[in-house]
Image 1: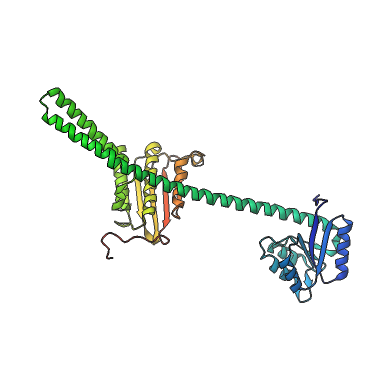
Image 2 (image 1 turned 90 degrees about the horizontal axis):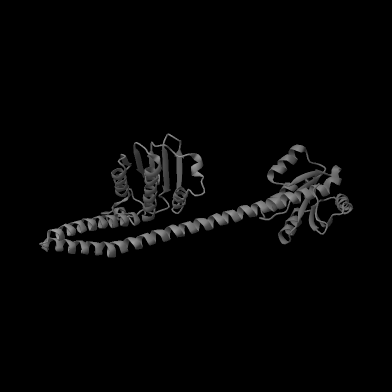
Length: 370
C-alpha cells in the first residue's frame, strides 16, 4: 500500500468545471486523512496563469471542459522542467483516450465513479514522480561527472604531451649534445694515443657512446616524434618500419593519399594510437602480418591497425586495469573522435580510429600558395 507522510500537506490544483464534483473530490480527500490545499480552476487561461506563478505538488484534471480538454492543459504543463504529476479525473473518457494520455506522459487516470481510490492513485503518482526525479538527478550527476572526467583526461593528455616535448628537448639539447661531444673527445684520444691498450679502450668507449646516442635519439623520437613534421603518413610508415625491424613481423601501410591533411592535435592522436596498437601487437598478439590503413575520405580520418594474431579475449577489454586501451578511447574523444576494437580469439584484432575532419580546419599543405 502506497502512503503519504502524515506531516505532508499537498498543494493540489483541480481543473474542474463542476463545483459539485470538486466538493466531492475535496470530501474524499479529507475523509482519507490526506492533508491538502485544493485549488479549483475551470478555464485554461486561469490554469496556465496559476501553474506559471506557483508550484503544485499534483494536478487533477477533468478530461472535457468548456472549449478545451485536459490535453490542452497538459501541453502547457509538460513544457516546465519540474512539472508535477498530472492525473486525469473524469467521468467521460474512454479506455483508448486514457491510454493515449498515459503515452503522452500523464501520470494516471481515474474515473469519477471510482473516486474512493483517489488517495491511493495520488500517493502512487507522487512516489513514481519522486523516483523519476531521483533517477534524473542521478543521470544528471553522472553526466556531469563524465564531463569532468573527460575534461580532466584531456588536460592530462595535454600535460603529458607538453612534458614529453620538454623532456625530448632536454635530451636533444643537453644529453644528446653532451654525449656527442664526449664521443668526439674519446675518438680524438684514440687517434692521438700511441698506446695500443689505450686505443682499444677508446674505441670501446666510442662504441658505447654511439649506442647511448642512438638510445637517446630513439627515446626522444618516442617522446615527441619530429617525424610528424613530415606528415602523418610518413610518421606511421616510420612506426611500421621500426616495428618490422624490431619484431621481424611484416607491417604494411596503405594510405588513401600521399599526404593526409589534418591538424597537429589530430595527427598526434592518430600517431599515438598506431604506436600503442603496435606495442600491444608486439607484446601479446604474435601475428604473422600487420596491416595499417590510413584514409581521409568523406572528411573523416580513419586509421585501422589489423593483425592476424591470437586476438583478445572479450573479458580482457573490460578489465579495470586495461589502461592502454581505455587511454586510446579517451585520447580519441579529446579531438571529437571515437575508437572501435574488434577481436576474436585466434582470429586477430582490428583497432579502428575515426575522427571527423570537418570541425577541425586543416592547415595548408607545405608548398601551398599563401
